[in-house]
Amino acid sequence: AQSVSQHNHHVILSEAASLELGCNYSYGGTVNLFWYVQYPGQHLQLLLKYFSGDPLVKGIKGFEAEFIKSKFSFNLRKPSVQWSDTAEYFCAVRSGNTGKLIFGQGTTLQVKP
Amino acid sequence: GAVVSQHPSWVICKSGTSVKIECRSLDFQATTMFWYRQFPKQSLMLMATSNEGSKATYEQGVEKDKFLINHASLTLSTLTVTSAHPEDSSFYICSARVRGLTYEQYFGPGTRLTVT
Image 1 (cartoon, rainbow over the protein chains, first blue to last red):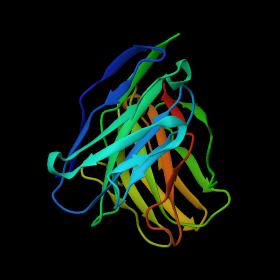
Image 2: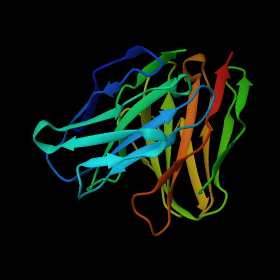
Image 3: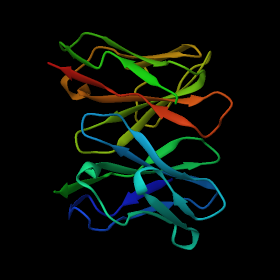
């Protein structure tokens, strides 16, 4: 069965620090990869997605992610975080077969001003 | 952009009663809608996939007789929690896939259900 694993459950950073959130998935076929963000009290929003092509994907708000097929990874990065990036971040995978999104456990990011 | 709404945003009900949650795609047609459940500080667990005009497909372990899903039109899907119990208290989130665009999926704001 497909699964998604996010390594960091709770990350605390100071403003301007760099961010990298790990995401690994288990599925051997074609996948689409996503990162979603959930700000406190708000609904899920799409940060970025990877379908094919350039494995380095740029998203909104300065976020980017790199798909490394050999490592089954899709890590999220941001060079300099802001206090407003405090939120819950979810990695998700969708297989071409089912079309269903499978979410990781989520990572709580807390940015201290 | 595409907007998905849910109603109500929060509801409190007594044990044994039923609660209906609506999910609407406001500015697009959605042939497929998904229902998720999210426990505090946890991830989203897919409950079921709802296709317009056909029966929902439930994930393993989800009771279809307890969580009734209806997708009567291209813009509306409903989730009814029947005979609710305190353990059904959770955050229920729907998402809608844009018709014609296989990969675009938009999420609603969620409904907080508390069963007393």
